[in-house]
Image (tube, rainbow, N blue to C red; front, side):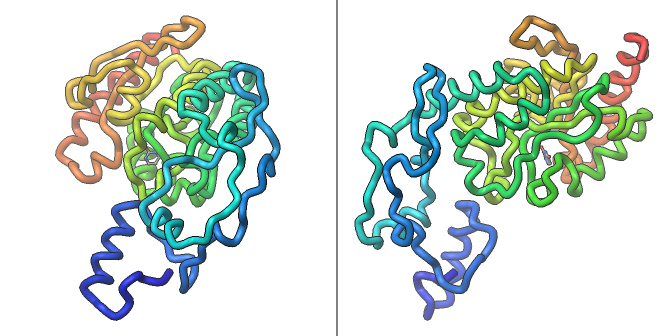
Length: 294
Ligand code: URA
């Protein structure tokens, strides 16, 4: 990747800081390459997809381009564009398509396939993998985190990095492991640079995780961290208030699943003094499982 100000060292530091702030965390080549100039998109080049209305629409590039990308594009020669009727599908249309794909999946395998074919979330364009799930789909306990990080993106599995190793120890402390729990995330694609997913991205991905929970139908749900709790428990309360108290996640078909919000392992790595709170929450889960005869 070539810096825009190659002879001025302070500017290079600024440029690197800028790249980091917009989520650019890997250098692929020595020089920047304008891919938009290289490959002028042809109208309807890719296979059409089915919209929520049942109509077919051409797949979209996200309209959310990064500032770095925008700079490249400003210098690029004009390129042919598909007709505007097929370019400006709003996020709501993508959320509707996600809802339709999620609802029509009758098994976890189908759901994974539908998510793999879905191009409506811009996070997919920067992620290496669809991080669908790990563990046992028959498990009584399902844990849901926020979004994959770098290690998860590389391996295609949730919670395999540092916070995942802590999570494994927390599970072991109440006699569980990845053969007796099922683990997924609200967002299945790594946000670039591990940035926080936007509310739009969360809304677009929400139908998938809701359907995943419904298909697993666990006896107990554990929400790891605030974003998972807020998204799936329909609340705006902070995690430090929510944690430790049983809530209910209600699926689209009306099944009420007891849910325990707790602190995210990544937060516990930064704030080890709060591990005792998470320990209490996990003991609550153990007691609940015993009460449910598990
Ligand atoms: N943090 C999450 O929320 N999910 C993962 O899979 C990894 C880290």
